Image 1 (spheres, rainbow, N blue to C red):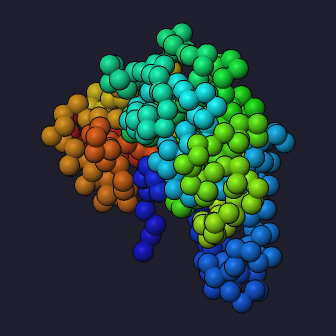
Image 2: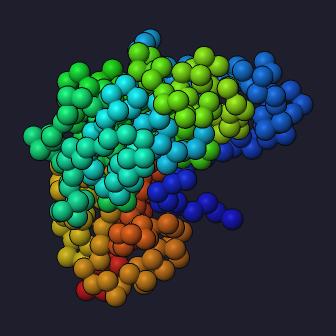
Image 3: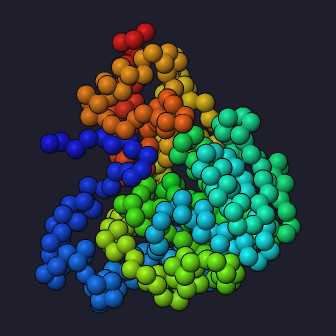
Length: 360
């Protein structure tokens, strides 16, 4: 069976070369006589895999030496609780910028652990833009400022790095990390689920400035304590070994493709192709403010919603799947992460053009 063009928002498409390498070593990794799934996480084979993966993260993102790199479990949803558990203890307060459903969920969860201030929100405008920094009302007493750099549901992204002064900036980068250049030193902490640009679901990346550790609330479970996980090299508990292994292969693939600068050009080219079509279409429209459009998740709507089902059915017949928008937003969504080729996006654009012509 031919592989489909998978526009899923996550878990998302992985590079075919990586999948083939995984397949080749599934039952016998590098002559070890066992699968990575069967290895002891304390054994020399996996210890080396973990070290290589962490090294690739540091290399690709140019992570400063005073930052820790943790590979944990639970995804970004768990981090909504784990971040305040570890950081809010310093002052008991935190600021949250809400630019979509995911950052709104983050704020709601954090409110269980301390005093949370809404610093800015674009909810009144339907989460169609990123709140501009001039509207942010930050507190000097905040232990951190939290934001989401790319919202997969609304297709809204922050293409600039906020200035939060001496208060550490925390960012959920689950859906756009490794998609372009990033100055890690501008952030206090970054977290991201792997299942968009870095690998399969099951492993969560946390990059944190070391001086922010050590303020965990007393009730923080040991496995969720960043300081303890750093002391144990992300192995306080058994890590998601196979997901980490595949993550390492994906990161090596990114490096071989030219690194994050190459990924940024690749992703910008794909996004420009779709947005250029949408901006001149009589049938399809994108509602997000132009400066805040995501390069990862391109949302669009048919002006005649009675054609939605026909559009999706026609796309599936041409091998294009997972284009239905999130259940809370409706419409359509094309998620075009690193592994999505330019040719695949061209195929979608061409299909949209034909659909518009045939249904004029």
